[in-house]
Amino acid sequence: MGILSRFREMMASNIHALLDKSEDPEKTIDDFMRNVNSDLGKVKAETASMLAEERRAKRALDECTTEIRKLQRYAEKAVEAGDDESARKFLDKKAALAEKEAELHAAYQAASANVASMKQIQDKLAADIGQLEERRAKLKGKIAATKAQQSLNSIGSSGGGKEAVFDAVEEKVNRAYDEAMAIAELRTEAKDDFDELFAQFEKSTSANAEDELAAIKEKMKKKE
Image (cartoon, rainbow, N blue to C red; front, side, top):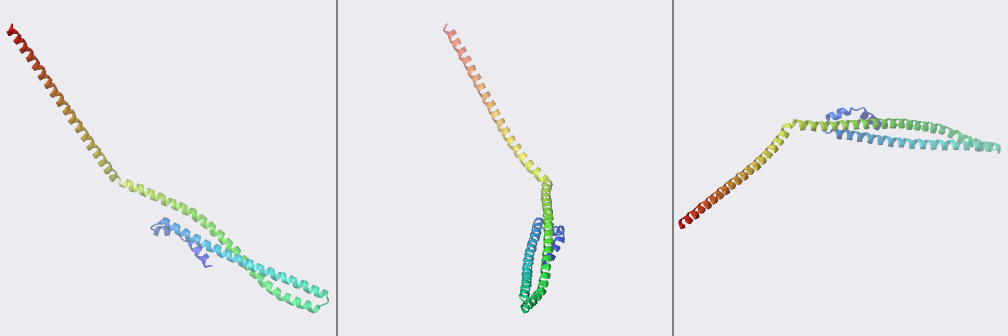
């Protein structure tokens, strides 16, 4: 029954104390449940072995009881046949088997009691494991929630880092905007310069034409 003692110790152990000492609580829970289920498997195997022993004891008892009844019938037939000597021999064997039957009956009762006890223990352990499975699910849920919260806390504590990233992006965007505006201004200035140059050219061209027209008129006057 060593396996049962170990199982009871595991069931009574404080899983929270194990988790406090563990660097990986989730793995600790899984290992703990793996060991518990392994021990339950051993309990089931021992229960099966005791059940087989109970069946053997029952079979031996039934065979002995059948033999006793057979000797009783032989003795009765021998008496009916007037063969008291044979009847006496059958009854002597029956008496010897009666003692054996008592021993076999006690062995069968003990085996049956062991099987009944093991079945109760197995059922109790299975129920306890079911409760532990529920606790494991809750604990793993809490662990997952804790990790998520820790991640959020970590992100929150690194707010300066996030702001620095946005500052860098904003600075880059502002720099690109300033460059684009500078180029636009240069193009505008260049356009204005060309417009002024053409205006001056057109102005000078127009002035030359007036001068030539005046010269032609002057020349015609001289001819007259």
